[in-house]
Structure formats: structure tokens, C-alpha cells
Length: 191
Image (cartoon, rainbow, N blue to C red; front, side, top):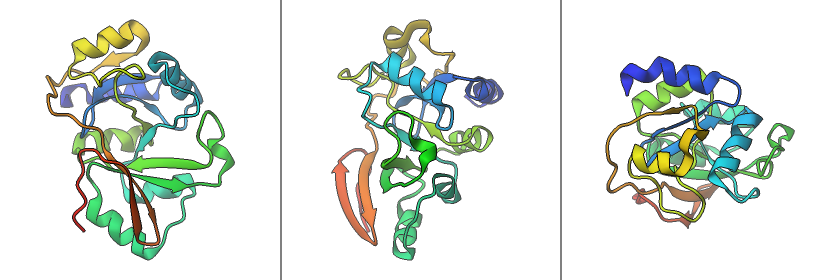
């Protein structure tokens, strides 16, 4: 995958660019979070319910400021314990920048445990990263399954073999140190 890094970045940075590739949990369909064309394209090719938001991958905890996210010092301590890792955190957001699609009131962000992916994000900015599947179908375990779902609807496929035991991230909400599990996934909280 490393040899494709420049090509992945180029495709993601093109207007409306969408790439299917492994994340730190499962294969995802990725596009720049600040590119409404890419976000809309992913909703269309996934046949996703329009009011169902995507997980957004960030490269560093400091990227939270790009979303005008406010959090307590207690929350920040927890971020450093669970990130990078398979935990997506839902945040309340009041920023007009995210009014396209379902963004606006709540965003779920994750700092992935994958150095190459974080490096790509440093060059592209935050990425929406839902699982590589059509809504209601199981996530693709390999590129062949992803191609069956999306065909030529994406700009690039990055093959990293079979992901047999892939699970989505655990989705939590975090408010002043109080954690609620919204969806149990790969991450197990041990704080």
C-alpha cells in the first residue's frame, strides 16, 4: 500500500475523489470530509440513507479544531488513552461548515491506528470513511467484494488482501469524562 501512497493522495485530493482502501479496522470507502462532491458521491454509491452520518478519520487530536469541537480536559485525557485506536467519538458541533448532508449537529471522529493512513490524512485533510459496502450489506472483506459493490464508481481500489476478522470501530459519546457506548465494535474500553 505504501508504494501507492502518492496515487492515493492524488485521487483523494481531486474534486469528488473517492478511494476504497483498508483502514485500521475494515475496508472503507474514503473521501475528503470537506469536499461536498466526494461526500455526496459516497452517499450515492453506498445507497446510504441521507441522514445517516459517516465516521470521519483525522490524523491527529489537534484536527478536532478543524471541526470547531469543544471538549473538556478530562475528555482530552481519555482521547490520549483510546487514540489512535478503533474508537470513534461522537461530538456535538455547532458550525455551519458542516450543513451539507447529515453533518451539522453531530460528528463522529476517529484517530486510526495506522501510520500510513494518518500520513495520507496529513496530505488530504480529514476523510469520511464509512465501511466499503452497500447499506444493509456486510462490509467487503477484500477488494473483489468491494468491486462487486461499487464497480467503476470509485476512483481507486487499494488491495491489502483479505480482512477476515474486520469489525467496525466502537462508537462512543464522551461528555466531561462520561462515556456511553453507542455501538460496540472492535474497540473494548479498558479505562
